[in-house]
Image 1 (tube, rainbow, N blue to C red):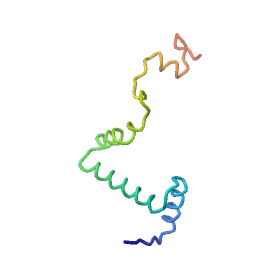
Image 2: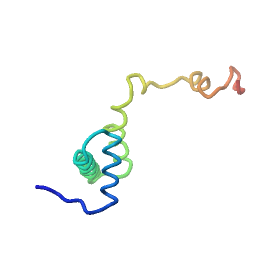
Image 3: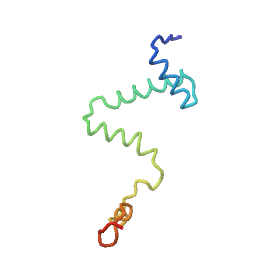
Image 4: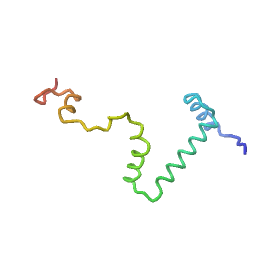
Length: 90
C-alpha cells in the first residue's frame, strides 16, 4: 500500500538520511520504524538497568572490534592517561 508523506520535517529528515546512508527514503523510513519497534519490544517489562544492558549486548558490543573488550591493567590505563612510573604527568 502506498503512503504519501505530507509532513515537511519528515520529508526533510528522510531526504537527509537517504543522502547520508545512500539508500532510498523508503528504506530509511522502513529501517527507522523497524528499529523503533525493536526498541519498544525489547524494553517491555524491563527496568532501566536491564534495558541498558540489553542495548549494550545487542547493539554496542557486537559492533566493537575483537579484543576491544579486554580489560586494561593499571599500568596500561596510566600510560593511556599520560602518567609516568610514579603517577606524575609525563
